[in-house]
Amino acid sequence: VQLVESGGGLVQAGGSLRLSCAASGRIYTIGTMGWYRQTPGKQRELVATITGGGDTNYADSVKGRFTISRDNAKKTVYLQMNNLKRDDTAVYYCNIDRMETHRGPIYDYWGQGTQVTVSS
Image (cartoon, rainbow, N blue to C red; front, side):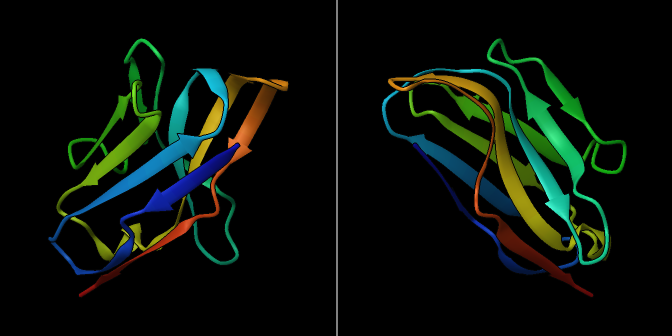
């Protein structure tokens, strides 16, 4: 089982980026998918989550600017980030809280992270 993230990069303040995170392997079901971010010296923080039924939750700092979505057939979660600010600079990590695989359930699974840098 793997989580592969893509879409990070360097963008100017006010710009947009779209992150993707695709799960691969013999996965039967996926629970809540989410995005978290971390900057040096700080704890990893929640950005947004989306349940299998499509219910979403956002950090206050990104509400109205970021949109999380998922494609269950593709086992992929997306994060559309608009009106980016310098404070959004961080490594962004994809997370799945629970999935059923051919080897049984896997909990709290993380991607490798993708860097997002917002310049002024």
